[in-house]
Amino acid sequence: MKCQSASNLLMRYIDNELNDLEKLELEHHIKDCRSCCKEFEAMEYMIEMIDLKEDISPPDNFEELVMGKIKNENSISKYKKINYQKHIIFLAALFTLMIVTYKTLWALVLSKFEVFKAFEIVINNTFKIVFNSYSIIIEVIFKFAYDYYYVIVLLIVMIYAICQLIFVKIREYRAS
Picture: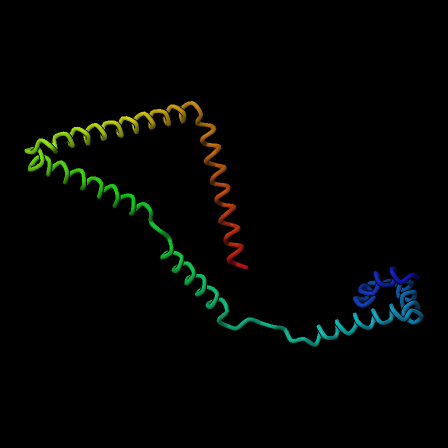
């Protein structure tokens, strides 16, 4: 028997899975070959050490500890999230308040002075240009969406899939 074959049979020998002929050949080879004998003794020693090793069991409150850390992690992450919807609503309300304040001041005070009438014309024309450009942009977007809705749906699905992959990678990174 060659050393390679003996090395392949050693674990099966320890597990008592060899037939009588294979067992005799291996035992004979181990007696004659010094390197295979050392390998066999090392394997037996490792198995003895594993058998002597005590079973490690988690503490009784292990599940509570893990679940507590998960809840703690979730509660911390809730505070880290930025609620953009609240910021957008706040900015829209602030912008509306500014326009109402300006219009009120115009009606009460500023319309009396000639200097501010020119300013009013500039402001009104600026608003008209901005709102007209917004309406044109929205019209183009809706036209594109109507003509190429399948592309948009595909892009949304792809973006969603990419976001999910990113979240999985982030979770894996945090877990490691």
